[in-house]
Length: 300
Image (tube, rainbow, N blue to C red; front, side, top):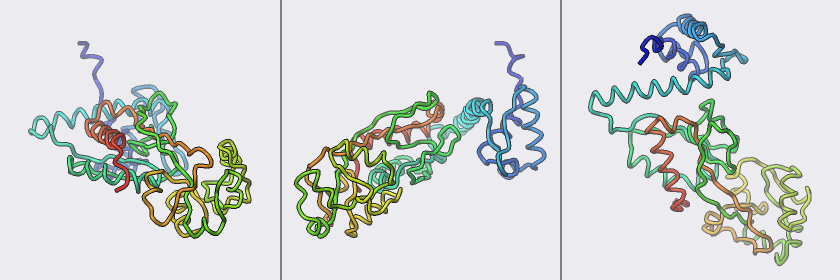
């Protein structure tokens, strides 16, 4: 081995990692018990040593450059390896501790994940879980989340994805609302209904028309990107709402619209970044999520 090529200052790398995770030199200084100028000098020295720019100022914060993003994963692997060495030396290498951040939609968080998260906590109480309930796509490469449940396959080659299920989603409405608008026997009958939608875009309406329902903007009663709010409004009798079959069929206050058009099939991809190959904690959570979702541990 050429030891001359392994002369690397870990303090500088650690300063960059803390800056990336905290979003600023001041945050990194607090995390490492150092001063802000010291962190700035260490990051600048690392940039000089490597001959590349690693961080750039965006507004009041800092973001990694493309070179910084490439480097930071290797530094995380170094940190994780150091932790494993420490755990092995103290006889605690089998324990799993630390934070894993999961992002999924509101309805997935409410209806799909609870029994699976309970299982993870039961098996590994040292793992802390942050749940980011949103339909907004979080950037896994920037570590805005560690694992994401998404309804599409990612195209980024730096991400790892596994398709775990497909959920048919049907339209539901309260018994009173369905009685008020009259029987739904054909897709054309849906023109008498009001739908609760994520948005008022022609993309959504075009998809409905492709499914056989010739609806217009006048059929979109209320739009909100929060699916749980849609579902609450539906159960309050304000219109029809798409919901996963297992969730909708289990709710006694609503009824499924007859199959006058095919269901909206929602694929589910479990996605994570490359750290899944170097972090045992992340791999364990990823695998338990995949297994739980495949087994159909759905409604709590």
